[in-house]
Image 1 (cartoon, each protein chain N blue to C red):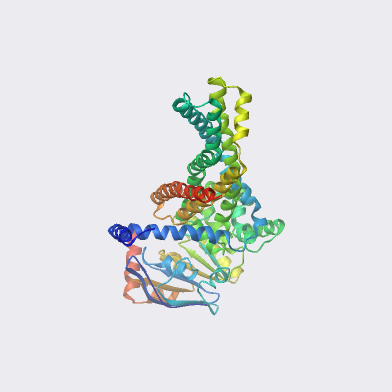
Image 2 (image 1 turned 120 degrees about the horizontal axis):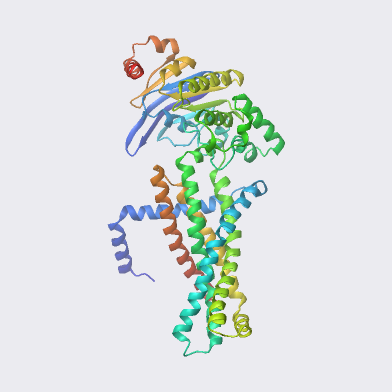
Length: 267
Length: 244
């Protein structure tokens, strides 16, 4: 609980940066507006099938490369660190279990989502902000086309599809990376490795990672679209919008991650 | 008819439009002239609801422009942007048929037929249909933007600096096209420009915007004869530049 003194200190700190605080509050409001306005209005989802498929190709398939490299390297690093620091104290079976648990609960979802922010989120912000500064968004509006419906909605749906799938894919590759080190370099038996993975699998933890996929996708895409639609001042504005979107996305994903872990820890 | 009443607009505390009163009469070609940065484009964008006014009202065919009516009003207006503003990621035919597909839910065959019709009307080569905007010249871009604006057969067409950045021959061709479309489609055309020759050549009526106010409004003959100080200053500066 925040007591009166804490609140006073917080308000005092905020009053030192009134414009920054207002800018931040305004952005948070804008991000929620982007999310809800694009999702909770009447859509003709079937007439946008092509747009959604194109976005799945751009966001999902286009990000396979970066997610693959990040995940395999992540798996190698995770197992190396655990083996290096704890290898002398715990049996190898527990190392496999520790890696598998951390991948399913945390590393797969977080690693894939951060890679997706870098690859897909930046593309979304750069694309929309370029459309904004070149008056393409205004042109859509004058044709009575709502940009939240035509541009944001397909990207949101594509994110809901792509993020969870890429997170599962990332989890596999994390474990594959771990397997490369622990089986082929460290000489641990493949059967024992697979047994450790099977033993550590928990459906609730897997469901948690899927929830994270959908939430992280919604966060990243709504932030990227919001800053794209808010861009101004030509090429400089495009750069600023993209940078700000990445910063907000990464911080928001970590914050949401913490909240989801807290919620699932109740079970 | 569009009635603009007491419209004011400021940006960052600077008053750009100050109590503007103007009407767009059915069937006419009205040109709004004035120096760059005087708020001509802002005025057009206010009428289509791209920018909100600080005060005043805008009525389009007796419908008051507000958040609830803005989409209905936009369906009555075709807007040709100065930069053409075609969606770069779509070929020309997709750009032109965008509203037919996403607002009117027409089938592919009907869209294709109407797009070809619009392309022919603006005298573009049909081969251009499959090309992307980045591969088109300035004149072709402008024609494609006009085709996109007329595809819904709007009652009003707004042209924001339609000839700026074009060579004199292409600029004249675009002016002829505006005249032809105005007669053929029986539309009301509102043109924003600082090109006096163009304004006098194609307009029925001319309005002059300076210092945030409408300082002159009248028929082309009146514009040519007027002793209005703002019009004279603007003409002198324009023709001096032409001579240079």
